[in-house]
Image 1: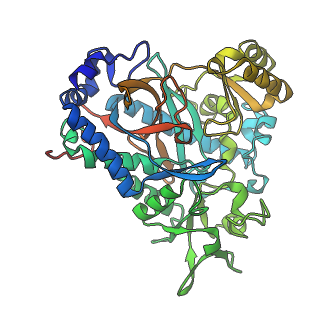
Image 2: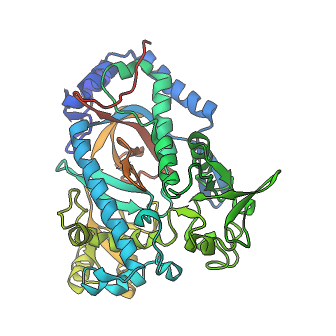
Image 3: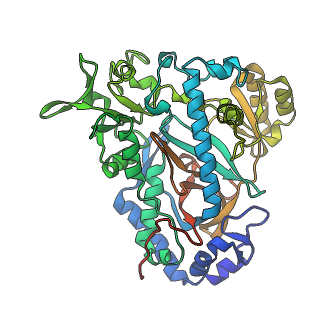
Length: 491
């Protein structure tokens, strides 16, 4: 493998493992040295074993297509991504600051709207958000926290700075794959963890349980359920995994009923048993056919009534998606200043808001250079990546922006960082992002690292697994400290 590493060249991009050709970064030097000294046969064996482990463990995701729903093995790359612990500590502080401000904003939106009155954010931006729910006005959930589980997407630019690309507050997914990425690495190359002090991620399920239990502090042992749309949902593997790992009851809407006393009950062979906390993995509009979509068969009639009366806690709270909006994203730095009186620790990607005439003029003049995103799409859909698009597509988006400027933002095309990745042509640089997960209840917990997603196609910036992306284990590496670290073992 020495030859492959000797010729590896990240080019002009910031590389997460190597500073320049032949120069591993300080935090990843021992890892790169270990990989360099593996024989080609041993490395190929590790790759094959990782693929076999994924099949054996049934780690899958679902791709929706015109041909039907296809279950695919999780695309995993065996070379870990490394982030120094000192940098991560600063990032974690910024993520905690951000989620505090976002939760204060959501609480404000549904309880008086003082920030709107003070001109921090325009009223029409909030009211036109697809995630705004009139039914949530006047509600204060436990601890004043609406977004109990958040997955914020981070990207590193060529300047080496980590930027927040977006906040996923509704039903963020991917944490099971973060945990399984670590399990796969430990199964295939256990001795690699002898090299460096790598912070553990395995305690996420216990933190998840503790956060959910904190939503009903008056109960010593609340019954906690994970509400799934069912086996045909693309994230069902994760739903089942988290329920098993965290000790939650995995249920579908048809398994639950709201009683005359407005408590929520699950149907069991022994009769009805009360459920105190629901970690829901279905969207607002399907959660209660009495309040939202009448045709929904995924939710529970009356559950909004039970939630409003405090008879059941729901995470994430209905209505939290008002802050999961790409236009509102542009105002998060102002929220931090307004609610916390602090400067943002983590920067937003520079953003032009097309509802502002001067921003819109700039965007329309520079469309071929920019990334344009609609307010409420996710997963990389419905967007324009100017430099990688056609003239026809650019003109299509020009019309869309002119017809509905309030629905669009634009950002510069970032030079996303890269990292060594296994390809058919050997080890080559591929672009990547990072989704850490933040739990907010009585306290705030941030995963050490998160889900690193990598664009497996050369030159691509799209990291979503549904569009050909893969994933890596993410190592937060310390030089010293009192953290709990992964334990290695001999080969």
